Length: 114
Length: 117
Image (cartoon, rainbow over all chains, first blue to last red; front, side, top):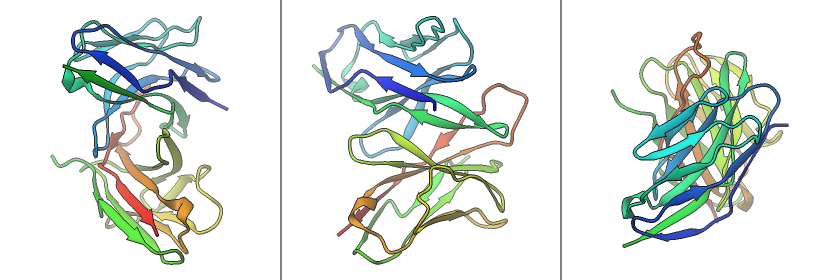
């Protein structure tokens, strides 16, 4: 079945450092790919998405490119802030009768120190 | 426009009791999904419902768990005779009716954190 594998955490960086969180997937067909962020005590928020190969999703300085040849969707940010501290989930869609159920990676906890 | 609402936010039950979790989707959304998040793990799909119909329950345990989304009122996830292993965060997400778009965004609620003593 479909699956998502994320870089294990936790990840701790200093403010303004460069961030990469790796994500690879296994899927039949051509799923859409997502990054969600979860702040403490809250639900998930969609951070960015890409719906086809070579698409680049971007939001709030974060970027990820849908790479079909390497089945990857790595999350990057050039200069992180303390407010980026959260848990990040990579996910893919698995279409069921016209709507998607999401398959998530295990999450990567990110802590940014001032 | 209010987001997805879940209640209660925290629920404590003793082993053997019933847990009832509620989810009100965003206004105009007719698709509801339930996911479970065990400690330090990602979310796992449980069930997908439309009004009065269960579309996909492939992630739902076969026993003790049930879900509904009635014509009126919130979606309910019911866990009977809870055990300690049911302790988790349960998230609900909703999306609008199917469109021709390749992707139909899911909006998540804040979750219900269930603790079984």
